[in-house]
Length: 141
Picture: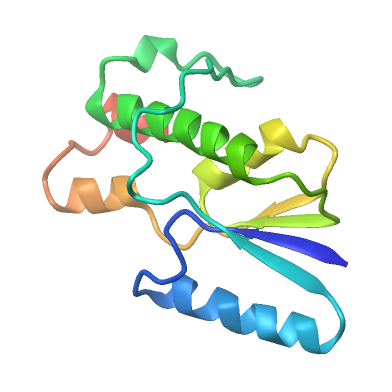
């Protein structure tokens, strides 16, 4: 089995996800499964220019919100980086962030994909007083 573990942050960044996923890879390799780690480097900013549309809703009414605009650009950047770097097919994709899941679903529409959400950036923004509870950025996430 060939598994793609799609992280948002690079595996060398401190944190639970970044430290656990490589450990999982070691365990998979022991049973004969291949696992590739993938993430978007911090240096990739504003590279993606390809329009991104959702099948389920129109995000454009929320354009202009700093949180929405940042997520949309990050999504475009993740798609751009993925198309540039990944050339393999996979039996399974495990995404560890919604941006990774959305980008990889677009590029690999026929590959089974599971997603684990480990935290909420919007919840952190609300708790830090950066956006208001119930505001459009927190509703559309």
